[in-house]
Length: 229
Image (cartoon, rainbow, N blue to C red; front, top):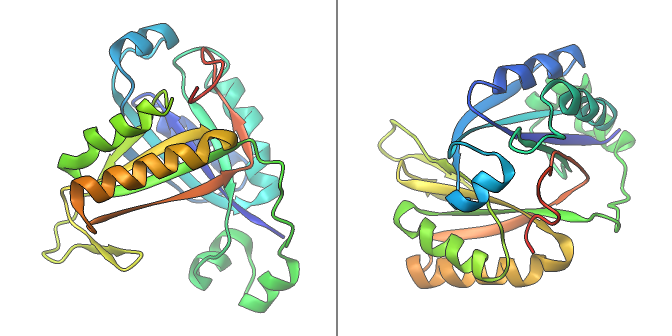
């Protein structure tokens, strides 16, 4: 058994539809986050996106169930039409045991390991780039990505009422932190990720980082021949 994470980036108030589709596929928990896009107004008009505002939905489940959700999302949210959003999945390489039992019914780490698929495919066509940085550096970091051919992305704002903030990979995530998500073709990932990392270093020093995740399934790129080139 392999676990995947579903990402759906959709217009405002459409996140509940994604959650409902997940529930119908027996994927019990879906997290809806407020976000906004980085796409310039001219490109937004071309692909039919009328607003920067977006919702990001994340759900974790067994690979088979997660993949079954994509056709339903494409149909019910009209993802084949420009401006209606995108959805994609990425495999997980690790998960907390408490979450594992909720999403898969496995009771122990060994149960999971005994069923986990070890073959990380080499035929991925896209990657998700994730960059975490101070909010004031976001524009410069995305400009660096755009200079390498990136067409657009999604920004999440870190929000935390606690004084010390949450930790993400051992780093404090303060309210002013931004998380930039960029979907790129795999062949273009090295140069775009390098540009993002260099921009983060230049703008924030050590106060930021970036990483990539393979995207296994993708739907909803209507209006764009290529995501990032």
